[in-house]
Length: 190
Image (cartoon, rainbow, N blue to C red):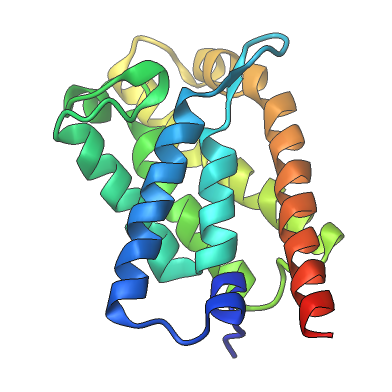
């Protein structure tokens, strides 16, 4: 049984205009997150996947996935929304294409977990974020092995292991933000 998402609980029933604004706002949040680079070892991390988790957890499965599709279409059309200001359809076909396309499923899965009530508390949201983030590596690494000379071990070493610490940080950050927002909403209604 579906429960309310954070945006439904705070904004009420969504009209078509509200839904369109949520999708556009979500795509903008993802685009901004893609441009923010945080120094970390062994590689810097962007806040792109944190933004995708937030969009999914707050907007739900359908609107979260729609926001990512809008983001990908914006980038493919030439808007500089991809990491580092990248743009163009070639990004969807390059080494990171599997991750970019996997973002749709990532937002959908985060939203589904939110709709099922899993992503409400701190621990549930953190575990959901970790699971969804880990699942992103399936299409990402499969694509990486298909379009580069890397075998699976090389793809894991180049495309997964350096990013795992950042995924943990972003999962905790998403859990803190989402559970804090639910608590604040409960207090406001109090």
